[in-house]
Image 1 (cartoon, one colour):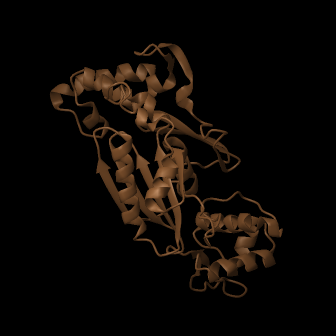
Image 2 (image 1 turned 90 degrees about the vertical axis):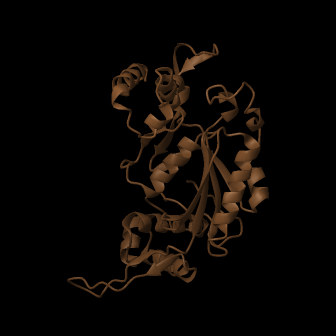
Length: 323
């Protein structure tokens, strides 16, 4: 999930992981707030002195910003901890109820929505299954779920709505089991505008791979270096790019669209073949179906019947040879 700022909200630009170092100028107030929030998020809890050391801010600047965030209830003090020397330290942590994020994923088989608190813990979630991601029904489901979950957040504390979905969904009707042109309603559709109008929430849209990378960067631990390529296997293969500790989207939000890497040959529709055709779970599912198996069930983790295990392993091996 990726959350965007709300104009005029006290949350401002504060959601997400911040870079490692910062400055003390007033022009960087929001930046320094993100810096402190990011440092605390990574450590769990820090004293003011530790915050200053972790961010590179002066002790005075760190103290002023921390006090402001405490007053706004984005941070909370924990019980004092007495060390071996010196005065007891007061750990400062994120306030779980200080901010909320709302995310929606529009996928080929379902629309999923989740409300998380400031720690990233799931408060509530909703899921709507569908046979195909048709624009009208999918957006109606997304809006309904978002409105229901938004009502569970504390007033004035919701950072906004983030939507994750595959890019260029209209181009994949046949691969998703639909007739040609069935998904053309997605072409040029202002998804962010439609959901903002339906929910009253400031909305941002990202491709699903970039959104997954942003979530891992902010809340996970798989990205352990300053720069990384994140591979995402949804229906299609995709990726996210982290450069110097920050998510890099690129001019069109597809900086790490590894699925577009060219491959030899052409696909079934005569288009130039790309990595997305050879390494995407959707095509593994098709290969399993072609072998007379239930591809969707097997990919979901259901074990094949004993008599079908050999066929499943052979189909997977053939797919893996090209992937």
